[in-house]
Image (cartoon, rainbow, N blue to C red; front, side, top):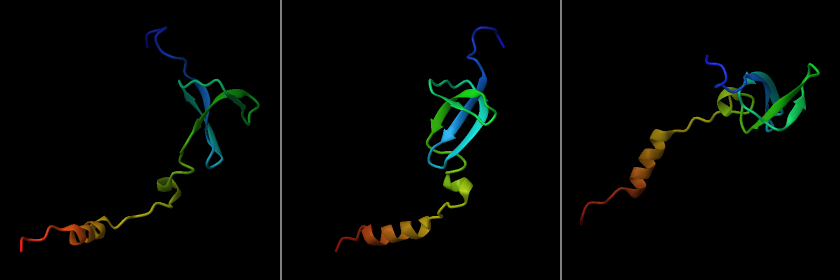
Length: 84
C-alpha cells in the first residue's frame, strides 16, 4: 500500500439497536460517537439498522412467498378478455 493515501484502519464497534447486538471489528468507517467496550477501551460506534442478529434470513424467520400462485391469481383476475 502507498503510504498516506489510505484512511486509518482501526477497531470500530457496530451496534444493531433493533436487536440489542453489537460486535467489535476493524474498519475504516468513522464516527463522532464512542462507546466503552467489554475490554474497558473506548471505540467509535456505528449504529446500523440491520445485522445478522435481526435479519430474517439469518434468524430463520424468513417467509417464503408462493409467487407462482400469486401470478396465476393476478392473471385470472386481470386477464384481458377476448373481444365479444
